[in-house]
Amino acid sequence: MKQRIITGLIGGAIFVLLTVAGGWYFYGLLLLLALVGFWEYIRMNSLSWRHPASLVGFAGVLILLFPWHELDIQQPNGLHMLWLLLFLLLIVTVLTKNKFTIDGAALLLLGALYVGYGFHAMFEVRNAGSHGLLATFLAFGSIWASDIGAYFFGRAIGKHKLWPSISPNKTIEGSLGGVILSIIVALVFAWIYPDLIPFGRAILIGLTAAVAGQLGDLIQSAYKRVRGIKDTGSILPGHGGVLDRCDSWLIVFPLLIMMELLPLG
Image 1 (cartoon, rainbow, N blue to C red):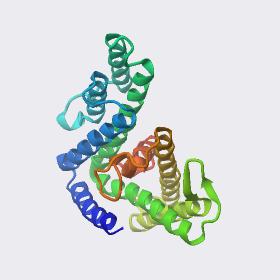
Image 2: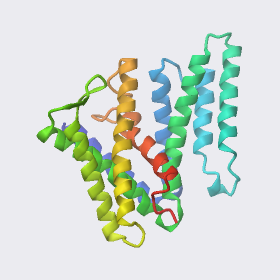
Image 3: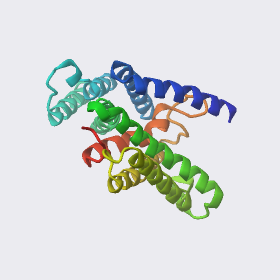
């Protein structure tokens, strides 16, 4: 527990500092997290990072995360980028004479999109106009509030298992506690910035961050059970891997962008 707390405090301080700094500092952080996260993903699927398909997957993550607008470069069509990545992965199945199969190609396409666009969405929010930092902390604050609420409510009054076959420690009471605390935190932001965040929208942000964040956690838990592992990695002592820590973020940020809930003007 001591190691977990120390790692959390140091990692959290660095994360907040680079988030506030923004720009290339924040991009560098996201790039590092994305590359390590995808490395964990390919390792979960029993592939070496040197495998040609893995290298194509890494290239896909980099392309999806690349800061096109920051360099005044027109961003390629997203569907075109995904199709090109698919095409390259299918070429690998041919060149390896099906030692690397179409199933593997589908897994790496999924992983590149999951990791690459998930972290790109965080960069997109942070660099969105004059309110990017506010929107970023609003999203993260709601996600973290959900995690904290679920943990403490679950320990205090949790009796009914939420999804025991996937995550045996999670409870319905804890899940609801996470939703409540996430909404409260979002409402606090709305109270401080009423001109930017209407109360109705704050409730939707808190609800979305909590529900989608918990689903993101369950998605990663389900996949780890399929692969028979406890953590995706060990880069963060006491906390597991990057995908263990960022599973909620990778789902919540794209969804909040798609729903146009954050103050990105």
